[in-house]
Length: 487
Image (tube, rainbow, N blue to C red; front, side, top):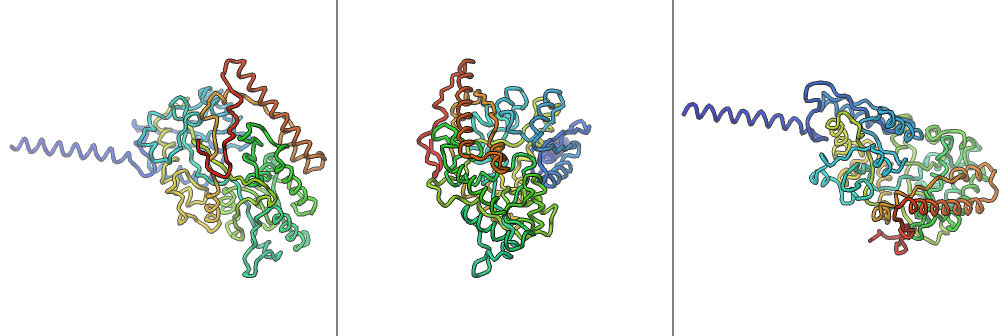
């Protein structure tokens, strides 16, 4: 009897020890063990291109390393416009990071075909996938031939907003009878407000500003067309016709006329073409101009560089009051965020870091830090908003609708390799702004013709390579851009 009791005690103690070991691996924010099971230190190389988000990522690294003392995260933040090139060089030279933000270029399918990304199915079980909302995993996007390569981290919200310096607006008398700032609703409102601010301070500040030194900011301003009849302000493509419509859709030309009108008024900060985006954000916070188009990352940036700056508010991008068509910001199934290199020597530890970044706990901390919305709806509660401005940003998320994604139904479309035609929209906007291009309508029509011709060439090239591609796949004529797309 005594021996039986002793054996029972030993069994119980064994179960307790095993349970303790298992529980130690289930830390908040990540699943799995502590890594480096042999007690040796493992270093995970991590890359992103984030600047304003950097403090939040640094805090996640600190929390992760506390939970996984045998894993060290070595973070490298690359220059955003050099990131795709640097990552490609690292992949070719065998020095790729273990975990990294996945760039848009080269095309993600090409990154998969070139063997950059590690399939995640070993860890990304059905139970793991269930923590993300429906549509987070889509064949043809972040899932290819049943293999999962990433999961979206961002929540659905317009990626650009209008930032308003409330101090300058009040100085210019742009308030209602209760003293509240009159938020510009239309392009005409933006132009008149910019003019009023510029005139009210006698050239000490301007109504509108941006920083185009990095050669990608001017198209951000063009995104004001997104809610005024453009179904894709970034590419100029209209999925309803499967054609580029830079010249055919008048909204682009109308926007240029409005924008150059502000420049002619003297309402845009004079050095907009020579300063970079970070300098422009600093100018805005310093009260040197009154309106700025940018994303939620601005808020975290100001919290770091101008912690006392509170005199601003966030509004949806204004629309053209004369626009005949109503359009929205759109989302599609799937989505991309971080990936794990197929060449990693530490896949288990890399997964732990990947999983940590994508966890609900990390998502809540991201929102509370004011970095943006996350794909997990439970993380996007208004009470998590760290500032009134972030709560205003969260309210803009309602204006996002589901758009068709033909490439998910026809993954062969990814084999159609369009080449960039120059001058592109950035070059054209620069030329118009500096006065080197006089006829913007002709320039837009020329861009449209060149891009449509390039699309047809790329389709024929794919067909000649044996890819069965139908040009009609690019067209979704039954799509109503004012509603969520129902296939």
